[in-house]
Amino acid sequence: NCIVVRIEVQQDWLAVTVDDDGVGIPDGIWEFRAPGIDRAGLGLTSLRERAAEVGGRFSVGRAPQSQGSSQRPGTRVRALLPLVERTT
Image (cartoon, rainbow, N blue to C red):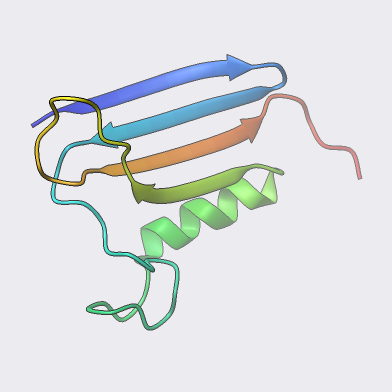
């Protein structure tokens, strides 16, 4: 099993990406009635809301497959957060 964490500064943004090679995450995780689950977990929903509050973005999905990787789909969690304070 492998987890890769990347933290990058891209212009005025902080990008945090976590990829793993685990069993993956169900399609439609953000849909209220996704197949096999009742709803997105409160933790995921809270992270998405907190990122939005500061003008950022948060996403969860399948990790891109690299050559020679395992057959499992893996998961990518990514937050893109502004480094400068928003003015209203």
